[in-house]
Length: 173
Image (cartoon, rainbow, N blue to C red; front, side, top):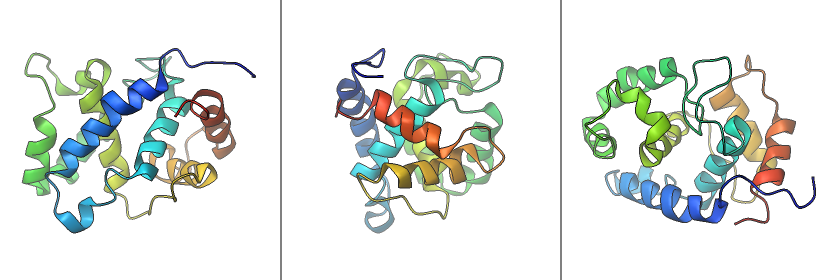
């Protein structure tokens, strides 16, 4: 679809939400493993995830439980806390600093708190043993998204991811 623009300014989302959030969380990681946390590849993967999951406009899944631009399911959110962050108290404390105390349950902040949702989405990928694709490798990002985020049983396809990345993100950053 030539000339189509996302419902929001993608460069602003990258510069004012994704990059500062990744910088903040990465500052609390050990220097070795934290190096890729805020990489250009991670930024592209997150932008592609939003393009695929919500088209930069849906804050709740239509007909489903997923929440926020990243369409994170509450069960995935709870699993991240129970089976990953519970064993990384310093990282958990860092991520929790992004959360507002005004909303309960905390998973509702996946809708209203873009920085917190970005950190949670990045951690879903970060905890996986599957390596990120190289920056600029959109097909590689699609493979990572499918294996880690959507899972082989999910309805989304790598082709959809690539199409949505091209539609909403490419040429905007």
